[in-house]
Length: 264
Image 1 (cartoon, rainbow, N blue to C red):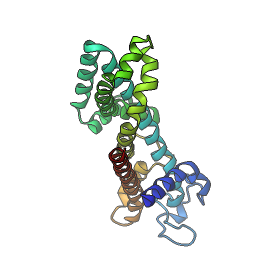
Image 2 (image 1 turned 120 degrees about the vertical axis):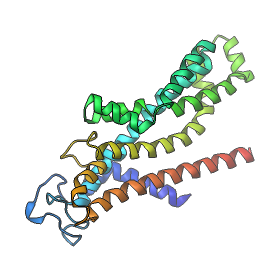
Image 3 (image 1 turned 45 degrees about the vertical axis):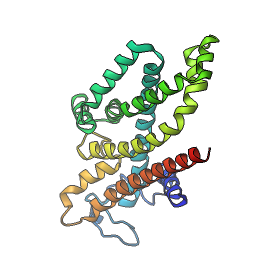
Image 4 (image 1 turned 60 degrees about the vertical axis):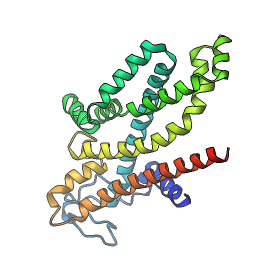
């Protein structure tokens, strides 16, 4: 549990302070030093334009992890609101919300995101919109399921009889019950958002050059995959380790919550 927490904290620090720790300008082109192997001057080597790979990885963490955080939080907010509307709004609202959720779930998330990005055009805003539109459904189903259970409890019924507004009931009674489960779901969706951002970046729909982003770095390095495979290994390893650390953190959090319920 502690080692997982250390990894997560490390990646959060990279997201916040990576650009400060970068030894070189990530966009500075230096053709004479292109495709250099790892060494003293360039710890992880240079790419086809002579840019320092380590600096690009550190700057890219802000884009890959930062955008994934934004996407996962927006999806959490939208999905939770829709789930609470389904749980509190009566049969008609429940039917509309859940059929809408089922419709979105019928399409593979990544394929749908690629289609949306292809229609709207490449860019950071499009990237956030495409992944948010295709990522809120699991939150909605979890929020709705727990919300229906909470809605039958005596203190919630008494709150309704006392005249509390639906927003007040959701704030004081629903959300405290939802947060533990939604936090576990969020960790998994955060990891999926990192994969989605890297995938769209590799396909050319994400953060546009010369800004460094891990998926874009993979796209730039594919041409030299045979001659200098380290160019692809470093950003690919960053994606893998990030996703693995966040998933392990989610598993540890789930186990901790399960133990807490057993002892309660």
